Length: 256
Image 1 (cartoon, rainbow, N blue to C red):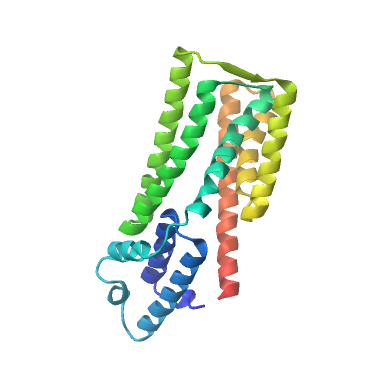
Image 2: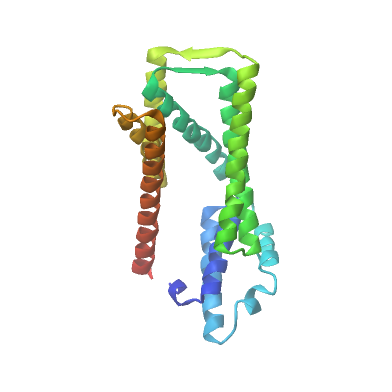
């Protein structure tokens, strides 16, 4: 492997290309083959005193779009992400509600949550594609990625507002039904984490709900509990992400 010997500009371009092709629905194996081949070309070019611009041209955006147009979209592989995203996002709400009792949702909330999951996935993928092909700074990338997050929050807020005005059928799952759903989602999270080889979903769920649950047994007032649980949540998720970044960096160093 030669990635550690490439220039910073070439490394960033390869990372952006991977993100762009992935968010365009291309096959993982083909993405890996193309980026590894391009990595070798960039390495040889830089060894001969050439810059990345002489390989990909003056417009990295057009180069990425050209490669993407020559690859087939892997609809079958992408189709599996939709139920994963839907079930994964629903688990955040369900486990939070299970802590406080049984599950009971209006039909509008259920449909709205499913639509939100799909729209959020599409929004994030569009943001990734836009960032990758335009070569923005890290700070600007961060703010662009906040757009689908805020749009999702507005959508959920709109659903809750409409639900408070227009009443739809309430589905009460009861004690048994609630625990069956909780058990199903727990099995899904375990299997998904093993399949994806990442613990991001269970770690995020624990960081979101465990502090709130434990703080409910304290004598703190509601505002203090909310503030403290929020801080703990962000600290836990932040520490996990730092750990994953360092782990990934060590793995790359070992491979290279």
